[in-house]
Structure formats: C-alpha cells, structure tokens
Length: 320
Image (cartoon, rainbow, N blue to C red; front, side):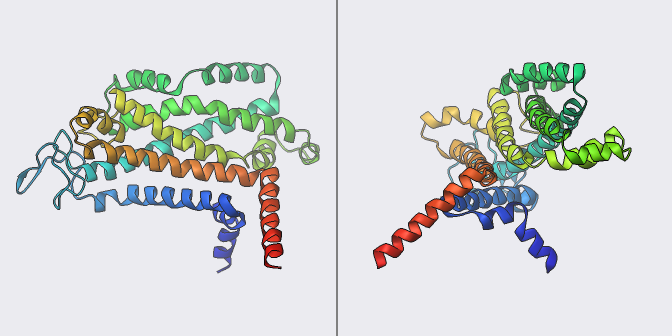
C-alpha cells in the first residue's frame, strides 16, 4: 500500500495530482491517448484480426480498396490488406522506434554531457562544436541518409527501426548533451562536489553518483517531446519510400503514401485511419510533454494557482 501511495505522489501520477484547470485537462488527455497507444502496441498481436501483410483467409483474397464492413471494420488497402490490422501492427512499430531512439539518445547524450561539463577544457570545446554541427542537420534528411547507409533505402523490420532510431539518436543527442552539460557545469562548483573531492572520491564516482542525480531532472520533458518527433520521422521515411518494407512490418507513413491516389477517387478509409493514428499519438505525447514542462516551471505553476484563486474569489463574491 505504501509503494502505491509513493507511486501516486511521484512521477507523472504526482504531476497529474498537482496540476489544475486546463493544465490538468491537457495532462490527463495526453496520458489517456498515450496509454491507449501503448496498450494497443503491446496487444497488437492478440487483437489484430489479421497479420500486417495478410492478403487472404480461408474464404479467399480480401480484395483491394474494399469499404468498411463486418469482415473488415476499417476496409482494405490498395494492396488488399486489412486497414485495422495495419493500424494496430503499425503502433507496435512506432513504439519500438520510440524506445530504441530515446534510450540510445539518452545514453549517449548523458555520458557525453557529464564528461564535457565536468572535465571542460579542449574536450568540452570539441564536443560542443560537434553537437552544434550535428544539430544543424534536418532530422528527416539525416534519417534518409542513415536509411540508405544502413539498409540501402529499403528496410526490413529490424533494419528499418534501427535506421530510424539511429537517425533520431544522432539528431537528439545534442539536446540531451546541452542540458546535461549545463547542469554538470553548475553542479561541479557546488559544495557537495567539493566535499566528495576532499574525501578522495574518483572523478567517475562524482559524475555518476553526485552530479548525475542532480543533472537529469529535466530529461522526462525532453523524452516526451522527442518521442513524438520520432513517430513523425518514421512516418516521413515511410511516406517517402525509405521506410520499412510492407511485407516485413506495418508502418503508418507507408500506408499514407499508398493511399494518396485513393483520396481523389473518394476512397477515404485507406488514408484517414493511419493518418488519424499519427495525429492522435503525436498529440497525446506532446500534451504530456507540454504539461510536464508547465508543471516543472514554478512561474507557470504559480500563475495557474493564482488564476484558480482569482476564480474562486470571483465565484464567492458573485454568490455573496
């Protein structure tokens, strides 16, 4: 019971409890959309009616561009695959890209930021220049280049996830690097770091036992915003034809690319559902990130509390 209470009072659940008004509405809406996406991705193999590349069942071929029906709730694609199954399996692909990209970005960015900020000197200057140079590349252009280098521009499921995650990692490592480096520069002059040096603690122990804990408080905010960008990058690669092969895995961007010609012919179901999936997932993750950012800023927190107090006072006056 104590563990559950602690979980409720900390992290995102604690943030939801401490939020107010519109801020709480944004956070709860974002959590619902993001949670639904994660559950859908995890349960995709069990709830998808067909495989992501399945074209027929025991009754024969599905048929191309079939409208929604009892057999195919969201219709079929131009390639004759079930739209609902492609959307469900595509959520699993998107989740894997997010996990790979965010984990790799954090791992590289945190280590480089700690080393650069703590040691400084010529190493710090070189890493800052490299980070600025990499940060100047457009993420989608870099993703295309990485996709060609890794898989020749056409990917299986693993290579497609790897190339997309690698490109996002290269683009977003500078963000984590800058944040951690700035915090490391601040923390290394604090009294607790000086005390650790006096008692003979090694540089690595100081970095990872003392500075690390105080320099990573803002990482959850960056993680959520980068997760939404990862989905858009994956969809962009698929739409341009540099994503995952449709026979190897489902991907929303590829399905949108194949449905472009359908829109003018009045066949709306092949494009609206994968497009809606991208919009809702990105919206949910972005709402969570923006809400956490507001809650982490004392000025925005105090402004929200002040506005709520003003509304309460106004309601009391009107009642009186």
